[in-house]
Length: 199
Image 1 (cartoon, one colour):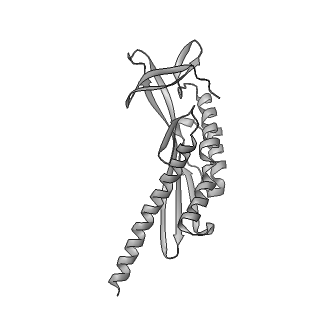
Image 2 (tube, one colour):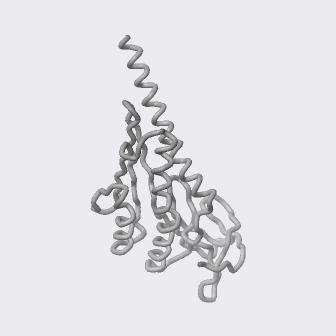
Image 3 (cartoon, rainbow, N blue to C red):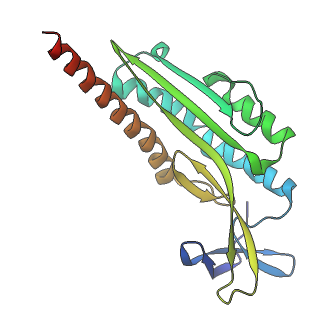
């Protein structure tokens, strides 16, 4: 757990922000600020364990419920885009993440998941990105720079010191389901148009 030292203002690419800060040595830095790859590794593992891996079965069961399809009609393929890792199914995602964080630079962690569904005659799917990114902040005066690491799941982003709230996890789930719904509607409309033309 990271202890909060205070709330401080910083200049980010999105403008001035008031965020939690932490004590590092004799100084104070924003949450998410790291320079040691080993520390980034440790935080990435925590983020994967808490903010991503628990979402996998929730996404799977939510798709089954929302679209009224059995689990064997939903297929997952996941791969690391920045390295030559094997493509895995839903059961191999956790191990794939663990293998990467054990052997490779966390800066290049970018997991892409393809979810494909079959509902009767309609095939639809989406892709979900899970990745680590770094951005540069500074103090309001621009005298000191900070390297901030951010973790993103399905379009929901938080610095690597902050675990996702229940609301953030719900947004990530909703983003996946909404995109699947959009793709399903498109495929359904295409099928209906083709059926009409064949009458």
